[in-house]
Picture 1 (cartoon, rainbow over the protein chains, first blue to last red):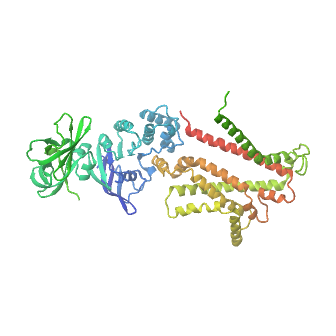
Picture 2 (cartoon, rainbow over the protein chains, first blue to last red):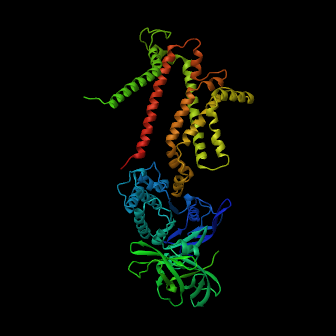
Picture 3 (cartoon, rainbow over the protein chains, first blue to last red):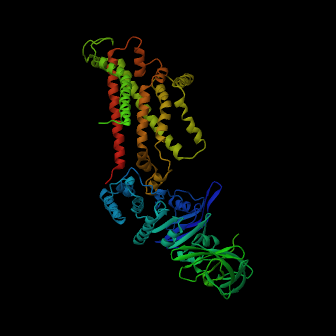
Length: 356
Length: 273
């Protein structure tokens, strides 16, 4: 509790009858890069706007540094926001935009100049101070928006899809730059995005949201390797998801049967006879001509998709479902319509509690 | 040198275009020019030229009826402008940035004072003022002018407010500015060109108005256009020519200033380092 800087307790938000955020609980640690990731309409931006003070929580408590902030106006909160569309003030120069927070606090001129110059150094835009936002490129605008939000040394920086409007190459570059900045300044970043790759590469922890609920809160590798809900497994990366029944339990390795055959996967807390989902990433799927012990999953190779070094393959199973399988080009070679046995390292497949 | 058909046609088009525009502008401006010239005419009536004089300009400033009604007009116009632009700004922001029941209705109702003939509004106001016993005079004229200036001001300013919601205002609040600081530093500058246009428009509409001013003036003095109109019966003296000449100069100068200010605003918007 002591090292958490932002805490949400049972926070809910409704717009009319529409509940956008449901019973949200999260503790964000000091200096952490936390990402709220989810499809549009999942409540991630609303959550951010509640922390910033632009939306009022319908119920629940939001605390910053152990202090409840519900009654504070946005301009009284020690958090700053980088907006999706930058929201730079068009009638002010880069210098005035960055220095705005200090000017409002009536800081002396020389201090403002000094701090703005420090920020310009930080974002590598020295010499641009007299430009108007209109005369900047997208990436430059983004950096000015970040500098403007950082000048007052906020405890927490809120970023609402800050790279959404940039092209792919610039986005990748800015991802690196943002991460570098966050490490250097040690400020807590709460980052909202719908781009899973962005979330995986930048975050210390990711909160995956869906329909107003946090489905999983964990490190990127945990999220990727051990999704705990079907939604997470399907949303992050590519997954093959089977529904089946547990027929045997050997410690943490479960044998599961479904209409296509018998497979093995890792999971704990499941009983024999329980209906479950099993998720396996295409890159962990293996294929052999000979049967493999513990597995009884047969299929017919349907088609290949060459993706450079990797070949994505679709295999039809006998219950008319399919499984995606990706391999390096040099690996085992199958032709279309070959009949194969499918298997994997049971440790790599995840058993997930059944839902719907 | 060979001249192609297309070049010939282009020459013709150019010539016809020039003649046409010169004719239009001549017809528009000759009366004004004649009036300006006659303001220097050494003769009581505007019939024929009788030598140069500036006596009408000196006479003008001793004609207290004209000077009084000029002041009357200017005071009303300035007040009407300030009131209309203030209400127009607040109204435009409210109608553009906030969702509320009846917004569409209010938006549509705005155009009614613009569409309805002014005489109808004037009569309606006159009836109301008589019914409630509101004394006719400067106050009633001011209210009358505001009724048609406010919609124009509001519509003009509304057009300048961008539709992208509150993100600039939110950014300002987020950076520590309270609502008043945000309005002064962010909202107002972003709609300033619209506010300026609305102010010029309101001032022009008010100072130029005759129907409202005539109807709502009561028995006491009224605005300059009303006075000039009433003088028409006994013949317009050249000091009115002098006055209108001065007014035209003032208007031309303020138009040039308006343009200059707008250009300046545009330039500061686009300056590069």
